[in-house]
Image 1: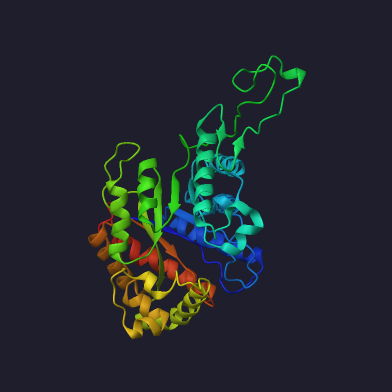
Image 2: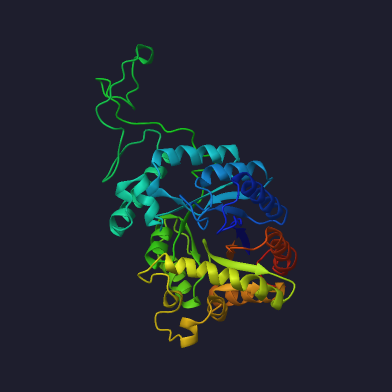
Length: 388
């Protein structure tokens, strides 16, 4: 069983960022000592209300946390590719991979925050979902080309590299290399440096709950992390991954190269966990639901398509709804371990990313939860991932 986590960053409260960074370092050192595999950094911008105050630059934050830890890997969950210039991402991630000597997991997605998009790239406007998805795919294609091609070129819908029309005139560089220049000196191909430390490049992770994305990921040799969902929805994604023709020809079993991101909190008793987390979950999911007035994040969206939720499901507290359908795992170490074992049996779960988005929770309680998880949940699963 692989255990990863996303650091707590006090959603709903705008703390001084030097303090947030110190807390992230402390959580990462705890996870490093407990043999978590990867710390994942999300990307958010313009968080005037504090709810989306994750690092605006997950690459820089990854570099800092890697420097303050020994062996844990650093990943981005995700880099919102349409909002970045792809050559910059290629350079920065390759440099980070060399700085950490291969401790990078490269996580990317199209992104969901419409408000931010227009501030960075008009072509990434997520109100035109098909166009922004094409931009995402082209950006990822460019990055992979830049990492793997010595003489790199690209011509697509949104980008062309090298930009045509520039000629080399520096006499020191004469005679010009034919691989990179035409006879008249025009720049025809590029070399992007540094090359990644990992061969041929860091593992690529997509963030998605859409079966077509899982199929595409398997075909291209990528991995996928999705948010917690009912088992049947997860299986529709994971089976799409298994059924695809893998780029490397490997036959995948359920759970290979896939994982789920789950809200998890561990306390000494169920009563303590409920009392601590209930108001935080209710507030946070009300916020999430309100950010999508057309209903994409309404309660029905969290359930199977043919589910028949009760009136209480639809109108009761979010905490009760999410606990009933096991979309969050909040309770004692034994309770959380039972959920992990259940999902191992149901869907072949092999990889969990802990999410700790709890507005208003005292930071020390987050550390206590992580400690209980690492000391009382993780040891229940042996090296083969099977519950002891």
